[in-house]
Image (cartoon, rainbow, N blue to C red; front, side, top):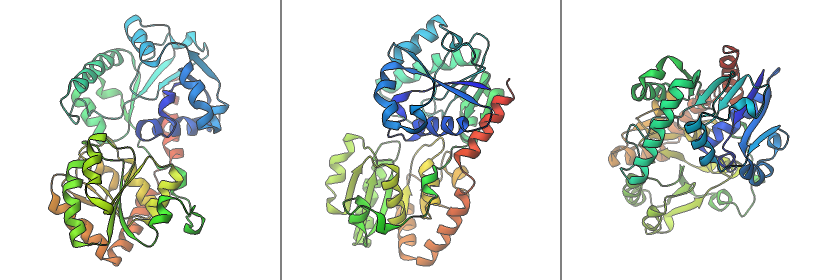
Length: 375
């Protein structure tokens, strides 16, 4: 089976969210017997990124276009060409691994669509958000006429996408996201570099917020709740891992030394933070899936997360779920976990059991079955 995967290369280095999904799925699909994967990508991005990602990305066969990604995408939508087969005549499956379109002349088109956030008004009502929504309405109109299968990552996302675009309902297929293998691996704190954030925090109690401070991740509530928590548990530290919206950084820093902003951290350092934390706090407003919830569970870390969008579907009964607008519920949940060693032990075991089936190899096997049903 010949698969041409259209990859936004800039998103797979230091990848989180959609970029991680694209990278992990294609790497694991390529390892399946009888699958021949080629990559379609922006030449400039390939030259900048492939060697940084390394591994399979140094050896995949590439078919490169010279236009910037956004210009090439506009050309494909407006001109309906050039077709995928003009890059690789032997392609049987063309997979757009993020919301995008590549026209085909005979091969079957699979498109990964992560959520309906722009159509559910999960983003602020800004000019930029309005422009993105318009672009995506045009894109989805094209895809509704062209795509054979829409792969999405949760039943929640499937339901919301079907609501926004009823014409694609019958072509939606749910294949869940998963957890990178590093988060399942045994962990030894003695091997942690002494200058790492986790090493500097060793011996201190802290709550970890993965994903950074953003409106969609409920930064406003986090920053309101933290002074209350800090007053009740004075030795507790809040560690916020990931890139932050700059608008929230001054407010976070104004809370003093009890708040640590790490910026982006690589998976091995993030794993150390998961293992060191008393709990992971993920009070997000809107998620099409919520990979950090399962990453924390795979590491055996208790999770406190929102009771909304895809989070209950992902977490099952292994997390404490709270209302994203309720400071009191979130404060009480964190207090309960931090102050109760038995509860933490129970949540560690439930979390590990919940995360165990969510591997990228399993997701790739389901995706391969989708491909096989098309050719």
